Image (cartoon, rainbow, N blue to C red; front, top):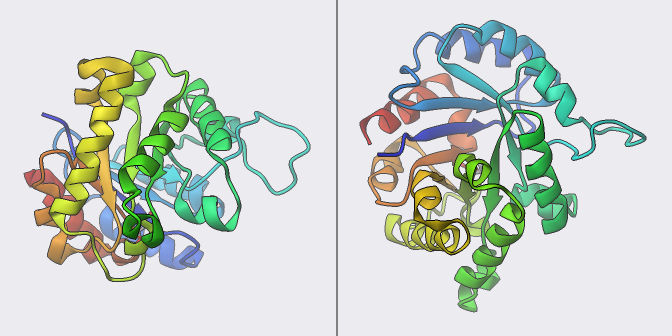
Length: 253
Ligand SMILES: O=C(CO)COP(=O)(O)O
Protein backbone atom coordinates (compact mmCIF):
# COMPACT_ATOMS: atom_id res chain seq x y z
CA UNK A 1 0.00 0.00 0.00
CA UNK A 2 1.47 3.32 -1.07
CA UNK A 3 1.22 6.23 1.31
CA UNK A 4 -0.64 9.27 -0.02
CA UNK A 5 1.24 12.56 -0.45
CA UNK A 6 -0.87 15.70 -0.21
CA UNK A 7 1.06 18.78 -1.29
CA UNK A 8 -0.21 22.35 -1.31
CA UNK A 9 1.44 24.42 -4.01
CA UNK A 10 1.02 28.04 -2.97
CA UNK A 11 2.57 29.29 -6.23
CA UNK A 12 3.35 33.06 -5.98
CA UNK A 13 0.83 33.78 -3.23
CA UNK A 14 0.75 34.96 0.40
CA UNK A 15 2.51 37.62 2.42
CA UNK A 16 4.96 36.61 5.11
CA UNK A 17 2.30 37.12 7.78
CA UNK A 18 -0.25 35.05 5.89
CA UNK A 19 2.31 32.28 5.47
CA UNK A 20 3.05 32.33 9.21
CA UNK A 21 -0.63 32.27 10.14
CA UNK A 22 -1.22 29.29 7.87
CA UNK A 23 1.69 27.36 9.38
CA UNK A 24 0.61 28.11 12.95
CA UNK A 25 -2.90 26.90 12.13
CA UNK A 26 -1.82 23.66 10.47
CA UNK A 27 1.54 22.44 11.79
CA UNK A 28 0.15 20.62 14.82
CA UNK A 29 -3.07 19.54 13.12
CA UNK A 30 -1.80 17.47 10.21
CA UNK A 31 -1.86 13.68 10.63
CA UNK A 32 1.26 11.65 11.41
CA UNK A 33 3.57 10.95 8.45
CA UNK A 34 2.86 7.25 9.01
CA UNK A 35 -0.65 7.96 7.73
CA UNK A 36 -0.16 10.60 5.05
CA UNK A 37 2.65 12.92 3.94
CA UNK A 38 1.59 16.57 4.28
CA UNK A 39 3.63 19.08 2.33
CA UNK A 40 3.50 22.83 1.75
CA UNK A 41 5.34 24.14 -1.32
CA UNK A 42 6.11 27.74 -0.38
CA UNK A 43 7.82 30.67 -2.15
CA UNK A 44 11.60 30.90 -1.60
CA UNK A 45 11.61 33.88 0.81
CA UNK A 46 9.47 31.98 3.33
CA UNK A 47 11.29 28.66 3.25
CA UNK A 48 13.85 29.18 6.02
CA UNK A 49 11.30 30.45 8.54
CA UNK A 50 8.73 27.79 7.70
CA UNK A 51 11.26 24.96 7.94
CA UNK A 52 12.30 26.25 11.40
CA UNK A 53 8.72 26.57 12.55
CA UNK A 54 7.69 23.10 11.43
CA UNK A 55 10.69 21.25 12.94
CA UNK A 56 9.45 18.32 14.99
CA UNK A 57 5.98 18.46 13.40
CA UNK A 58 4.47 16.29 10.66
CA UNK A 59 4.29 19.15 8.15
CA UNK A 60 7.02 19.18 5.50
CA UNK A 61 8.16 22.22 3.57
CA UNK A 62 8.99 22.10 -0.14
CA UNK A 63 10.36 24.47 -2.76
CA UNK A 64 8.52 25.12 -6.01
CA UNK A 65 11.56 25.07 -8.28
CA UNK A 66 15.37 25.19 -8.30
CA UNK A 67 18.30 25.36 -10.71
CA UNK A 68 20.21 22.18 -11.50
CA UNK A 69 23.68 23.67 -10.96
CA UNK A 70 25.19 23.80 -7.47
CA UNK A 71 26.39 27.39 -7.82
CA UNK A 72 27.60 29.89 -10.40
CA UNK A 73 26.64 32.87 -12.51
CA UNK A 74 22.89 32.27 -12.66
CA UNK A 75 21.41 35.54 -11.43
CA UNK A 76 18.08 35.13 -9.72
CA UNK A 77 18.32 31.35 -9.36
CA UNK A 78 18.35 29.09 -6.28
CA UNK A 79 20.51 25.96 -6.10
CA UNK A 80 19.82 22.47 -4.71
CA UNK A 81 22.69 22.99 -2.25
CA UNK A 82 20.90 26.01 -0.78
CA UNK A 83 17.60 24.17 -0.44
CA UNK A 84 19.22 21.16 1.18
CA UNK A 85 21.06 23.43 3.60
CA UNK A 86 17.77 25.04 4.61
CA UNK A 87 16.26 21.67 5.47
CA UNK A 88 13.75 21.60 2.63
CA UNK A 89 12.74 18.00 1.86
CA UNK A 90 10.83 18.08 -1.44
CA UNK A 91 11.05 20.20 -4.56
CA UNK A 92 8.44 20.62 -7.30
CA UNK A 93 10.08 20.31 -10.72
CA UNK A 94 8.73 20.95 -14.20
CA UNK A 95 5.41 22.46 -13.20
CA UNK A 96 3.47 23.38 -16.36
CA UNK A 97 3.74 27.05 -15.41
CA UNK A 98 7.54 26.69 -15.38
CA UNK A 99 7.47 24.82 -18.68
CA UNK A 100 5.13 27.30 -20.37
CA UNK A 101 6.01 30.69 -18.92
CA UNK A 102 9.68 30.14 -18.14
CA UNK A 103 10.38 27.82 -21.09
CA UNK A 104 11.82 24.92 -19.09
CA UNK A 105 12.61 21.95 -21.30
CA UNK A 106 12.43 18.22 -20.60
CA UNK A 107 16.22 18.24 -20.57
CA UNK A 108 16.34 20.95 -17.89
CA UNK A 109 13.84 19.01 -15.81
CA UNK A 110 15.84 15.79 -16.10
CA UNK A 111 18.96 17.64 -14.91
CA UNK A 112 16.97 19.06 -12.00
CA UNK A 113 15.69 15.61 -11.02
CA UNK A 114 19.28 14.32 -10.89
CA UNK A 115 20.38 17.40 -8.96
CA UNK A 116 17.58 16.85 -6.45
CA UNK A 117 18.77 13.31 -5.71
CA UNK A 118 22.37 14.46 -5.48
CA UNK A 119 21.30 16.83 -2.71
CA UNK A 120 18.89 14.71 -0.74
CA UNK A 121 15.71 16.33 -2.02
CA UNK A 122 12.66 14.35 -3.16
CA UNK A 123 11.49 15.57 -6.57
CA UNK A 124 7.79 16.05 -7.32
CA UNK A 125 7.90 15.92 -11.12
CA UNK A 126 4.94 17.46 -12.94
CA UNK A 127 3.65 16.22 -16.27
CA UNK A 128 0.43 16.84 -18.15
CA UNK A 129 -1.17 17.64 -21.47
CA UNK A 130 -2.77 20.80 -22.84
CA UNK A 131 -6.40 20.93 -23.90
CA UNK A 132 -5.30 20.87 -27.54
CA UNK A 133 -3.29 17.72 -26.96
CA UNK A 134 -6.19 16.05 -25.14
CA UNK A 135 -8.58 16.90 -27.94
CA UNK A 136 -6.11 15.57 -30.52
CA UNK A 137 -5.89 12.30 -28.55
CA UNK A 138 -2.21 12.86 -27.76
CA UNK A 139 -2.47 12.74 -23.97
CA UNK A 140 -0.89 9.34 -23.39
CA UNK A 141 1.99 9.85 -25.86
CA UNK A 142 2.76 13.30 -24.51
CA UNK A 143 2.71 12.32 -20.85
CA UNK A 144 4.70 9.17 -21.59
CA UNK A 145 7.42 11.19 -23.32
CA UNK A 146 7.56 13.67 -20.42
CA UNK A 147 7.90 10.88 -17.84
CA UNK A 148 10.59 9.04 -19.81
CA UNK A 149 12.65 12.19 -20.27
CA UNK A 150 12.29 13.34 -16.67
CA UNK A 151 13.34 9.99 -15.19
CA UNK A 152 16.09 9.22 -17.69
CA UNK A 153 19.28 7.90 -16.10
CA UNK A 154 18.00 7.41 -12.56
CA UNK A 155 18.95 4.33 -10.57
CA UNK A 156 16.13 1.98 -9.53
CA UNK A 157 16.46 3.22 -5.98
CA UNK A 158 16.10 6.85 -7.05
CA UNK A 159 13.23 6.16 -9.46
CA UNK A 160 11.27 4.45 -6.69
CA UNK A 161 11.44 7.64 -4.63
CA UNK A 162 10.23 10.02 -7.33
CA UNK A 163 6.79 11.52 -6.91
CA UNK A 164 5.10 12.16 -10.25
CA UNK A 165 2.29 14.72 -10.37
CA UNK A 166 -0.11 14.31 -13.26
CA UNK A 167 -1.58 17.76 -13.84
CA UNK A 168 -3.62 18.22 -17.01
CA UNK A 169 -3.01 21.85 -17.95
CA UNK A 170 -6.67 22.41 -18.83
CA UNK A 171 -7.67 21.52 -15.28
CA UNK A 172 -5.23 23.87 -13.49
CA UNK A 173 -6.89 26.87 -11.89
CA UNK A 174 -9.91 26.49 -14.16
CA UNK A 175 -12.32 24.79 -11.80
CA UNK A 176 -12.53 22.10 -14.45
CA UNK A 177 -11.30 18.88 -12.78
CA UNK A 178 -10.50 15.76 -14.74
CA UNK A 179 -13.02 13.09 -13.82
CA UNK A 180 -11.54 10.55 -11.46
CA UNK A 181 -11.63 8.00 -14.30
CA UNK A 182 -9.80 10.33 -16.70
CA UNK A 183 -7.20 11.10 -14.04
CA UNK A 184 -6.72 7.46 -13.09
CA UNK A 185 -6.44 6.34 -16.69
CA UNK A 186 -3.42 8.59 -17.22
CA UNK A 187 -1.90 7.71 -13.83
CA UNK A 188 -2.20 4.01 -14.70
CA UNK A 189 -0.46 4.70 -17.99
CA UNK A 190 2.33 6.54 -16.17
CA UNK A 191 2.82 3.53 -13.89
CA UNK A 192 3.07 1.30 -16.98
CA UNK A 193 5.76 3.56 -18.40
CA UNK A 194 7.69 3.20 -15.15
CA UNK A 195 7.27 -0.61 -15.33
CA UNK A 196 8.78 -0.60 -18.85
CA UNK A 197 11.81 1.32 -17.67
CA UNK A 198 12.36 0.19 -14.11
CA UNK A 199 10.27 -2.93 -13.58
CA UNK A 200 7.26 -3.58 -11.43
CA UNK A 201 8.90 -3.25 -7.99
CA UNK A 202 9.91 0.35 -8.72
CA UNK A 203 6.57 1.13 -10.38
CA UNK A 204 4.67 -0.19 -7.38
CA UNK A 205 6.64 2.11 -5.10
CA UNK A 206 6.36 5.31 -7.15
CA UNK A 207 3.70 7.72 -5.93
CA UNK A 208 1.59 9.41 -8.58
CA UNK A 209 -0.39 12.48 -7.60
CA UNK A 210 -3.22 14.13 -9.45
CA UNK A 211 -3.38 17.93 -9.66
CA UNK A 212 -5.85 20.34 -11.23
CA UNK A 213 -8.77 21.96 -9.38
CA UNK A 214 -8.59 19.49 -6.48
CA UNK A 215 -10.71 20.64 -3.53
CA UNK A 216 -12.21 19.12 -0.40
CA UNK A 217 -15.41 18.33 -2.35
CA UNK A 218 -13.71 16.13 -4.97
CA UNK A 219 -10.57 14.87 -3.24
CA UNK A 220 -12.04 11.64 -1.81
CA UNK A 221 -13.25 10.49 -5.19
CA UNK A 222 -9.88 11.22 -6.81
CA UNK A 223 -7.80 9.60 -4.06
CA UNK A 224 -9.94 6.46 -4.08
CA UNK A 225 -8.67 5.62 -7.58
CA UNK A 226 -6.26 2.70 -7.88
CA UNK A 227 -3.29 4.60 -9.30
CA UNK A 228 -3.71 7.98 -7.62
CA UNK A 229 -1.52 8.30 -4.55
CA UNK A 230 -2.05 11.88 -3.56
CA UNK A 231 -2.78 15.37 -4.79
CA UNK A 232 -0.87 18.50 -5.77
CA UNK A 233 -3.22 21.34 -4.96
CA UNK A 234 -3.06 25.02 -5.86
CA UNK A 235 -6.02 27.24 -4.99
CA UNK A 236 -7.61 24.98 -2.38
CA UNK A 237 -4.35 24.70 -0.44
CA UNK A 238 -4.19 28.41 0.40
CA UNK A 239 -6.66 28.29 3.29
CA UNK A 240 -5.60 26.33 6.38
CA UNK A 241 -9.02 24.75 6.93
CA UNK A 242 -9.23 23.58 3.34
CA UNK A 243 -5.66 22.21 3.38
CA UNK A 244 -6.41 20.28 6.57
CA UNK A 245 -9.47 18.70 4.96
CA UNK A 246 -7.34 17.61 2.01
CA UNK A 247 -4.67 15.95 4.17
CA UNK A 248 -7.36 14.31 6.25
CA UNK A 249 -8.76 12.78 3.06
CA UNK A 250 -5.30 11.42 2.25
CA UNK A 251 -5.24 9.64 5.57
CA UNK A 252 -8.28 7.55 4.71
CA UNK A 253 -7.06 6.25 1.36
O1 LIG B 1 -1.14 23.66 -10.54
C1 LIG B 1 -1.67 23.12 -9.59
C2 LIG B 1 -0.88 22.61 -8.46
O2 LIG B 1 0.47 22.56 -8.78
C3 LIG B 1 -3.15 23.01 -9.51
O3 LIG B 1 -3.68 24.25 -9.24
P1 LIG B 1 -5.25 24.38 -8.84
O4 LIG B 1 -5.47 23.38 -7.73
O5 LIG B 1 -5.41 25.79 -8.42
O6 LIG B 1 -6.01 24.00 -10.08
